[in-house]
Image (cartoon, rainbow, N blue to C red; front, top):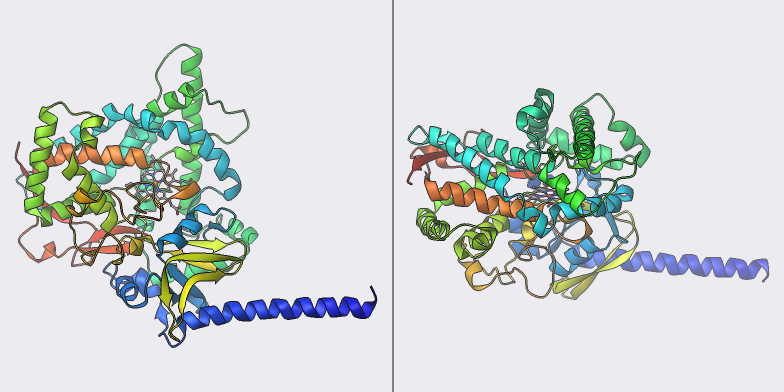
Length: 504
Ligand code: HEM
């Protein structure tokens, strides 16, 4: 080939590529032209969860564009078919860029999951039942002290109980054994994950723009939140390693003094080669999993207090079932209990918004066409490498066009009695096709653990206590997004005040 022919081929390639870029831009423009600039930060800073995004969902459909920091465009995606690709397509998406997405790095993720899966299988989780029951009993003792008193914030007790179950099941440790330093860092991280100020949003956005090497260095900077995150990682690593040392020692002496979780890993024949990072380090209950910190649990009791009739029906079911001898099977066969858990997970997914970055150009399919302003129907969306999209799981769970129906914003457990799964057709989430635990290769590892724990805690507490709203104005508790969803009092305070009365 002569030089002129090379030039012609190169010029044609450039023209084809430019045409492709133009078609992508035109397709996106066709969807969004004339639409107002929706300011994404409003979703994160509003005191009332869903105030903006549920309105935009209804107006613009399951895919729409919001403006991020520094003028960046981001798609908010709640369409089930598109979410399925985002969650399952490791080849298309990576985590982040939000630095607060404290997941394991992609490269070590597969190895860790394989190592830990056996400890969270259905049979393994059933063996933790005595731990859940013991902690639920302790929680009931604490509620006994609150019963008949002025309305109280349940958050501290619930937060402690959720941390305790993970510590005991995974590590065989009490909270005291975790150490004061660990507990205070845990509290700090919980609070950090519970705020979402404009400064923090800007800080996250700046970090997200940095190349990986700078971001990784940044994590060691002596400023919050990186300082606490680093300390929490160090402490969890230290505790994880010391537990593994104890396990090995106990096993070598033929003793059985270790956590149920490690027994499960041992039972599956899993061995860690020396010198490799141990699973205990990643599983130690640091708030790097801030979705499981009690705030979410508190929202469940708040809904019960708001729906007294349902609460009474649920109590009847619990008492009848437990009288017949409670077991995992019995919990699974309690229709009202499970409908209640699904409905609260649907309305208040602990992580209602997350982000992912495309690692290659691809086309996102849609379950339902969206209408462009120019009248054309769009059934797929081109995504380019490096583009960040929002995984709008909270909106997915309030879609009107599916089995959820027009009453998607109402707390209505009865919807699950006729239909056990959200969004027929596109299989997205692991539990009831909800996205509360997400789906795909990064699905919540502890979802069965969390579910059984919720079944046991709710049965124990609703069986014994009645929860009601206080008579004064403070009962105007709202749910707020601040990395996780949490109840917030009308005066801005965290938590929900509930009156507790012993009934059994
Ligand atoms: C109601 C309680 C819980 C909820 C709603 C929840 C939710 C979630 C969600 C949404 C994710 C995915 C985050 C993402 O991909 O951005 C996740 C990941 C994870 N969760 Fe949970 N979780 C809960 C309880 C637990 C418990 C009790 C454990 C362990 C004892 C746990 C362990 C994990 C782990 C290890 C991951 C990371 C999985 C991975 O990256 O492969 N979770 N959780």
